Amino acid sequence: MLPAPLLMNSFLVAALSLVMTRLTCSSLSVSDIPHIAAYFGTKTRYEEVNRHLLRDGLWVNTSVRKSPAAERCTPIHLTAVIRHGCRYPTIQNIRKIQKLSELVRREASRGSDESEGWLRNIQNGWEMWYKEDMDGQLVPKGREDLRLLARRLAILFPALLSEKNRSSGRIRFLTSSKHRCVSSVEAFQEGLQQHWGNQDVDYRHEVNDDLMRFFERCLGYVEGVEKNRTALLEVDKFRRGEEMEGVRRRMADRLGLPQHRLTPDLVEAAFFLCSYELSIKSLHSPWCFLFDRNDAKVLEYQSDLKQFWKRSYGHAVNSMSSCPLFHHVFRTLDKAGRPRRSTEASPEPASILVGHAETLLPLLSLLGLYKDQSLLRASNYQSQQGRSFRTSLIVPYAANLLFVLYDCQRGPRLQMLINESPARFPGLEEDAPLYRDVRAMYRHLLDGCDFHRECEGRPEGRGPNTEL
Ligand SMILES: *[C@@H]1O[C@H](CO)[C@@H](O)[C@H](O)[C@H]1NC(C)=O
Ligand SMILES: *[C@@H]1O[C@H](CO)[C@@H](O)[C@H](O)[C@H]1NC(C)=O
Ligand SMILES: *[C@@H]1O[C@H](CO)[C@@H](O)[C@H](O)[C@H]1NC(C)=O
Image 1 (cartoon, rainbow, N blue to C red):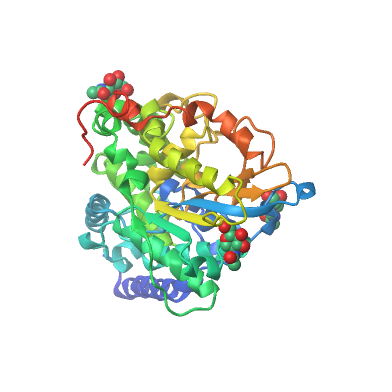
Image 2 (image 1 turned 30 degrees about the vertical axis):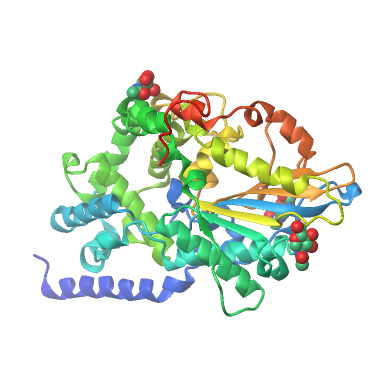
């Protein structure tokens, strides 16, 4: 037992630090951001990738538009494939968080590092506030993510995302049917209206899961990967491997718990909890002190491994399942770049497509991006330290893949931007190569990449129609 005054004192400190964190909630300074914030994989905030946005959410770098100056190019079309913004945890994660918080409250005691203030802050000051009905929904910060993104894109492409183009109904909005995506596409439209100084928004978007949730309609993918335990063998191995065991041991030490009380699931739950408190409430949560930077890198690798085998280069069908979206994008670009008679209507200036990390990763892989020399495996954590496949950088919340088509003297050119930074088509040297060169490079996909063959193992049009 502690003597009463001391006990009183520690309560005060805990209470006070709680008040302090509440106060700073909305204006978290850059130095208050957890040192592990850039390693949260698909749960990383967009600002961690574009750090200027920490100070100014409307910061835009107009030099990212890179068409050859000598060719007097003008942007004529923008296709944007965008991930939804910050969201609440899904039900499974909420249940894990619940279990973790009960365990720590009841059983955690001394930490080997004297368990400074943070353990007390967890035990006395932190309340389990996540409810099951929050299940994956967009949070207010996530709505803001999309509003700000819309405003920045309108600054970057004023002629395309213009009020006139919007009011004449020529900007197309498509979304996945998931609640968080529908809310995101609404927020994007709100952002545009804010940019033009309007109050009212009449939302105009279509739901299209064939395009934005192709993965769940691809039988070969569902059977071969999603429902197939062996497809993610490398992830299971890493989960039980020495690097993850080390993270678990150190976390148990810090909490003064026997290691067997902490399952790998609970270790992950604590890491995600730190990410959720930051992305949802802008809090530097006491849970973050359970991990140092090296722990975070190991946990990041675990999520990367999972995405790699489940959504990317691990299995060919992962990327091939995105063929419908790939064809949709290129058909839209074809139409926009086609020469027209002056009497013809001008093409669609912009197409905004809102989906998931699971929408973006297969498409990026199909395009050949972020492909490392060797596969990500449980055994090569060390040699993959410099890998390009880092989901924290590729698919944070509000991640976006932009295709910008320019009209130039030598013909249309296409530029790709990922999270508002220029990215090159693999194998092409220029920032904005001629569109016909891009088409030539992807010829094998443009002429193939047949959903029915890739996903159902049969040529197009034959056999029973299994689509809903
Ligand atoms: C702006 O974008 C250009 C082109 O990608 C890049 O070279 C430059 O470093 C960026 N500026 C800042 C301040 O990030
Ligand atoms: C499951 O995955 C393994 C490893 O990728 C593969 O060899 C096997 O064929 C898959 N099973 C099914 C039913 O597709
Ligand atoms: C609308 O989009 C077209 C491209 O299709 C562009 O040429 C035009 O300048 C845009 N802006 C307005 C105000 O119409």
